[in-house]
Image (cartoon, rainbow, N blue to C red):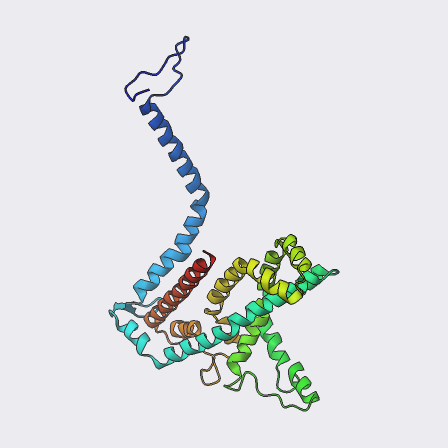
Amino acid sequence: MSRTETPPVHPGGVSLQLTPQQHGRLAWKYRARRWMVGYAFIAPILFFFAVFMIIPILWVVFGSFQQGGIITPSEYVGMDNWRSVFGDELVRTTVRNTGLFALLAIPGVIVAGLVLALALLRVQKGEAVFRAGIFFPVLAPPVIGALMFLFVLHPDFGAVTLAMRTVGLSSPSWLGDPTYALPTVAAFEIWRGAGFYALVFLAGLLVLPKELYQAAALDGANTLRRFWHVTLPLLKPTAQFVLVMATIWNLQLFDSVFVLTDGGPVNRTVTVVMYVYRSLFAFGNVGFGYALSMVLLVVILAVSLVQFRLLRSRRQ
């Protein structure tokens, strides 16, 4: 039927087919209804995303060009805060500390999470108890976990100190020595985050097809070869998710450093986020803190985008 042809009419007087104009109006109403229903479902998320993400980011960008306190009057200073960020010696120190910490903590927490997940997979009895024990550091408040860690590493009566004395070794000041402070904080973060990533890896392991393991066993592959040639390739999407999450999480290190070392000794554990906190609430240099936080946001976005890009190209 052409676009100008009149549609056939039922003997009772009811048209059996729609004209192109009627069809277009009905299609538009259908798409509009679907659009409205879809956005109605995500409206609460969009509202909270705008209130707690977009507006604060815009406020921080605006504040990075101002000079003044959070509640005191401010004045426009142009790019002065940004020039101060890139010319500050302590900023370079915090970037180096954050990078070194990430290099230690991210591989450590991924390996620890995978090992714990493989161990949980073999547990036959009391599985819930083991899962709760592994997940406890994640549930415990960071301050409580840090205090427990301080107690274990105490130079006089800590469990690590006593164990090293038993075998004739002297225990260093783990958090007071500039050489050991940052690796010790990384060890704490690995202990605190491994439980979460272990459950993520465990969820990925439980859905792997058993037929491939049976076929590999029939071909004579031992446990190590089955893990290397079957488990790791199939677990790659889960590992990619864990890598991105661990990167974002560990580049924002603050609470554990604040409790364990307060940035010491001699600024060896001051991170970028901790310097932002000090700039805002200790030094009152709000514009500088805003500019530094924007630099950190851009770095995290860039690293995440690079990871997504690399991982997507490998998957393709």
